[in-house]
Image (cartoon, rainbow over all chains, first blue to last red; front, top):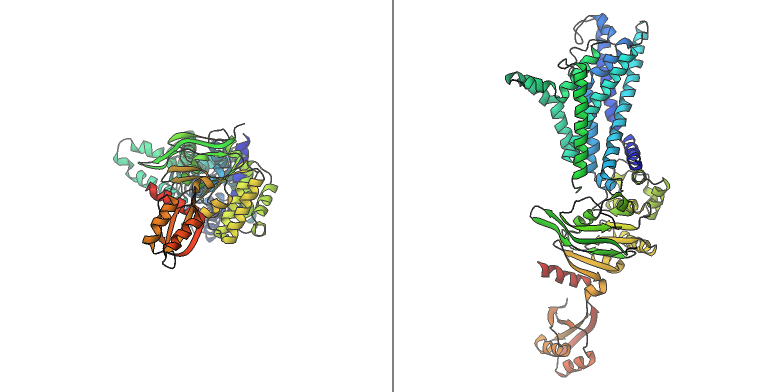
Length: 283
Length: 302
């Protein structure tokens, strides 16, 4: 057990000192700020109904207030957040091969399971940290909007907020596990990031387009990682706000089914990542 | 207590049809500096990787500290630098060592001590990516030293070092050996092995072709006679040595005859040469250079 803790601490230290960790986290927060607050606010101020994703201006304002925070938090995860988490994990694991640091780490004697577990746990800790910070950020920004627009400060339902945080963690965690798996599979940062992005941004959308041609394919496509993530985001955001029209947010699966699929993917990706590092030679 | 800190028995690694290491059997005894010698691509690094558990052998067996290679117990007591140092380029040298120290379960002081040991303390705060090849190599050695492991496995540790760096690396290895640490050192540089190793193993094309002391490897001393004309000198030298005589030319283009030195009455041979009207330019009894032995050995195998 000590080896697991030592490995996690060592890996966390090097991730916290890695500029890429902060750059990627910063990108996610910037996207969150831009698409949840900045653009809707500009549209709201302009009073033009068609300026940003349409809808009456009162709805636009409501989407920026604390009550909509649970939806605000999760609606960006299927597309941008997932991609950011996947890139991060793929870089962490892939670069360890590229830099030759796996070799250094494994020869320190933690054992391959503990070394892999430490790396994955450190990635998980970063994802959880990001979820916590995003929650605080969204609540803070929405309170600011409420104050500026002289709206009553009504906090969101805390149960819904917790569910949204859990869902966000699950979606980001699923993509991060996928990235870690790809990093271990391709043993390098470039191919793993490329393949991951190709999947999240292109392949699933194309499959969605052709699914109708083959019997039974739609059901499969609905259960792919991106669709499951989109469905969970759809299910969790519909309660507190309307996320329809947000790219990647779907209603293909019910919330529990989507969460179950995501949990399954996390387990599969992690097991594959462990198996790949455990069994293959480090050359 | 077993005196062999590393022992392998017909350790083999195949990549497809090619055996990178073919039935390698070697033993490293506690407290010695063992030179693992071979040309590039002979299988040195592959063998060392198997000893550290990075590569799974295709056949044979090995024990390190009496344990299976790559087991945490064996690795905790082994420091290693394999085929170039692998560090995080964005971290400073010191931070890199601190990360490694955490993986090893060591305290923070270890990293600073190790840096001082390889003369990198002054540049410890600079990022690894700004280091020269020699500094990177030294940082790799520093990481291997942390925690004072009983066994150090160093794969071509002087790679990329300038002459001063090489000399200080040799001193470091001798110090480590003086402190009772065992060093398994691979190299394609004979001078390095000649100067600091107690025993050597030679690997060529994946196979061990020799294991023993440096003196054993060199074998007997040789007699070199610079004398002309060769056709008159050679039979006399051959008669005196009662062994085969090799002919070569020195840098001035004169014939040099080389044969085994043992049992030759040198003054008598020289008198005989002079009496026969042969011009004698030089007479020397030399130990064979390791390089000669090595080249003979590698060519014989090919």
